[in-house]
Length: 145
Image (cartoon, rainbow, N blue to C red; front, side, top):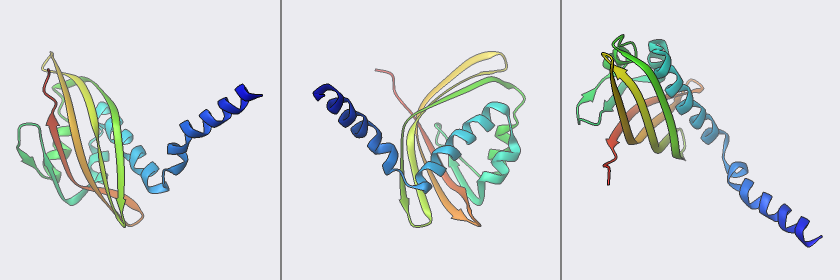
């Protein structure tokens, strides 16, 4: 009986963070995964829908991009064999604004040459017309120790 009670308490403690997530937090986690999957497929239409008109992206090289640049980057034909893996994702909601931070490991081939980026990211979203739009994103390379 004590073992069963212990297992039940352990299950509740482990699942509590999932139950505590708001609907908006869950939506933004889904948006982040959908965004990664769209990049893997080269789905520029997803970027067109997701990025706000005033979107600003800052890449690992410090170069800023706008919505038009981001849409073009999704459809680059010389980038193939794409994959991504999100981890350490945290979502904070401030009214109609959401901030998502996390880690993303992306792999790809560019002109046949393997590439890999292990980055920390910060994405800022605003909820408009019932959906989340990205207004800013920033990626920083994680240094290898």
